[in-house]
Image (cartoon, helix red, strand yellow):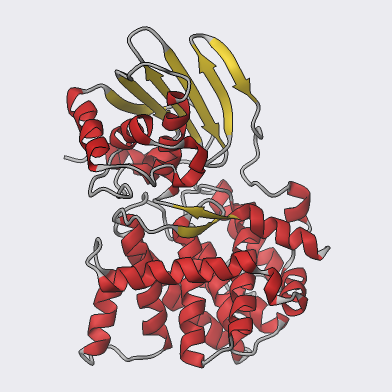
Amino acid sequence: MEKHSFIQILQNELVVALGCTEPVAIALAAAKAKTYLPDPIVRITVKASAGIIKNALAVGIPGTELTGIDFVAALGALAGNADKQLEVLADITSADIAEAQAMVEQGTATFELADTPRKLYIEVIAETEDRYAKVVITDNHTNITLIEVDGKVVESGGCANVSFKSSKEERGALSIDAIVDFVNTIDPEELRLVKQSIELNRKAGLDGLAHSYGLEVGKTIKENVQRGILSDDLISHAMALAAAGSDARMAGSSMPVMANSGSGNQGIAATNPVIAAAEKLGTSEDKLIRAVALSHLVTIYIKSKFGRLSALCGVTVSGTGASCGITYLLGGGKSEIKGAIQNMLGNVTGMMCDGAKGGCAMKVATCTSAAVQSALLASKGMTISSTNGFIENDAEKTIDNFCRIGNEATSDIDNLILDMMLNKE
């Protein structure tokens, strides 16, 4: 596989995002619809797949202290900038927030479950007094496949049935061996986007450690290290930095992060544990960049088989990428990196996704702890045996089994979880 193909994959799948990508994608669709309507919007309706509703229902909206699918749709329609893609809400004001809240309170912004087999489907209909515009996003968070205005299709296409911006052929050529070879031979100066992910996601983690966001998972870990209750070791440092980034993001921080495969939390969980390990190990910047590139590429590779949205938690995937990156920092080669994959997937598989919300930071912390433990074991040559469960002798086959579980064995879980979320007493 050529060097430029790896760089192209990174450029396609690492995207700067402001806010959780599911509600932000809803805001993007609404903002796009607004561009076709010259008059004030009086009603906005969202129809979305179970996976989108699950991840957009309770997560904080960036720049606000609020949550809600109806609210973010109204905010996107009123003040979103569709040209900024996943940073669509970067320029909102307090007046915009109040106006969006008013639409929700008046019942003129609503949402419902879409009748669709797609895991990622968003349909937004914005109405004025006498006109309407409909925008549909499918399969990935910025993939607009239909724009309809007053009954006429003005744009259609996008990338039908394509969940990833990189091509199937590019991702199909990936393998763990090829990824490690690329990481070992690439000039770190050519990995500017990876370096940017380190800068953005570390800054988000530090923001979460400095301020009181959400459950304060990362901040609480740091405070207990300072009190002497937890050790000031690699695991605690990695858990704190990674969880704090998720704390901030899930609570609606206005700080952008570098998302991986459509998820900011996955971008944070693939990046910050490796950064924290490098800080504890005194690693050079060049080696850190290579290790984070390895983590991102392993995450993209597994996600390409696992899917954009799943009933299983995506941080199990990015945590696996992080474990590979930490193993690399510890001096591990291909054998040890594959061992880290075996250890991670044999440990965290089965963690369910019950939507994006403050509690995600705890899952990030859990997977980060597992990532460090898996790396330490793998670096000693200790890996889960193929006699254990779905683990195979070959890490590539273990990945395939893991993705089969995520794709084939969880078909009813999303709907069950969504029913529980929407019908709480």
